[in-house]
Amino acid sequence: MKIAIIGTGYVGLPSGVGFAELGHTVTCIDNDQDKITSLKQGKLTLFEKGLEEIFNRHRLSGRLSFTSSMAEGVSGADVVIIAVGTPPHPKTNEADLSYIFAAASELAPLLDSYKVVAVKSTVPIGTGDQVENIIAEVNPSARCDVISLPEFLREGLALHDFFNPDRIVAGTDSEKAREVVKAMYQGMVSDDKLLFVRRRSSEAIKYVSNAFLAVKIHYINEIADLCEQVGANIAEVARGVGMDSRIGSKFLNSGPGFGGSCFPKDTMALSFMAHANSVNLTLVDATINGNFLRKKKMANRILHLVKGVRRPNVAVLGLAFKQDTDDCRESPAIDIVKELLTKTNGFINITAYDPKAMHTADKLLGDQIKYAPDMYSAVKGADVIAVLTEWDEFRTLDLARAADLVNHRNIMDCRNLLNKDQAEKSGFTYHCIGS
Ligand code: UGA
Image (cartoon, rainbow, N blue to C red):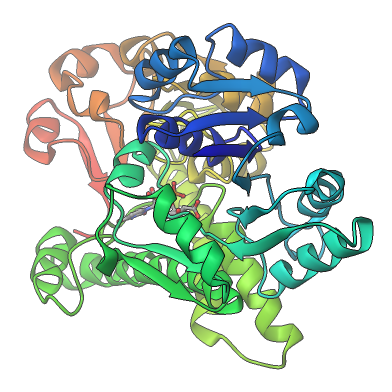
């Protein structure tokens, strides 16, 4: 089967590589010529664990190709997947659908033979109808079914999630389109994991899933605050609670708040949708607000540890929004760094190290902070070490060595990553979340 994917971001590219691995012929389309040139030359435009090897294998075998021409990419395709960005509107937080609509308009004249147009980007409920209308307006004789095909890949684990999905959700009433979806995933998922629903339900499932997970994280974060006050330990509490199969153990790690390009954006878009329809989503609204305040709270906790130090040196370990990605979009680490700079009027020296995300952080923070080539250079002369992303590499930090390098022995471990006993043995005052 031939699949065309419009958009080569964190959704489009891993999906394209995944479909090629499943045996399909895939063409990735992007109007960013620089990206296409890089991809054609075998240079990945984003970091995703495990992607490079499969990407290069299929690029060289010819099963995976790249183009900036929509006509070339879509020619002969059975399925066209739209996987462009839907960033939040800066004022209203409404999802910005301009890239989706532009893709639909450009695609419409090319739908001369039957194709399934699958919207994979996260889009507000009802967007499929709008895409269908645009296509019909631009090309009344277009032959296609517009379906919703949300993706549930986690960055950093995108390939794992692609090949081991909990479910494939497809929103369509068309029997023909359902058969095409079955063929796309043939051999990978059993029938009981293929969920066919109406298009609007499928669009809703994506938002409701992400918001549910965000609420779950916010809940455990607030419980962590309570644990700190009452002498309980959040790791033990989360383990005990998560053993209830009705609750589940995943997404119960407390930390500095959730980030990334999905949860913050999708909770806000869902809330916007609810308000526009006179529905109150009180849990979601409390989660959005609580998560915003949490990052300020983390910055305050870091500053509290260097109270009295004139122009403190802060070593930041981790800038990405989570481990195993170079993505800093809506990263709690970036927000915490910004808050530290604001609260001190810039009267602070921040030196950061991240294994993969320094180039992306640099675009957001520029020269407001310094970047170190490794963990030990980052902690040199620090008055406090702040762990902000849960990279495995940080677990290997030799705390005795770090103790000799720092100026003051303070740790604020916002990811509960380091070993408390070892930190204290090395003379650090160790603070973490939820105990
Ligand atoms: C999320 C969803 O998990 C995916 O299913 C979905 O496909 C994706 O959004 C999307 O909509 O495209 P992602 O944003 O890549 O995936 O990252 P997550 O692993 O879900 O983490 C999101 C944030 O929550 C991170 O900042 C992470 O550190 C935080 N988190 C996660 C916690 O604080 N605690 C946890 O227990 C889990």
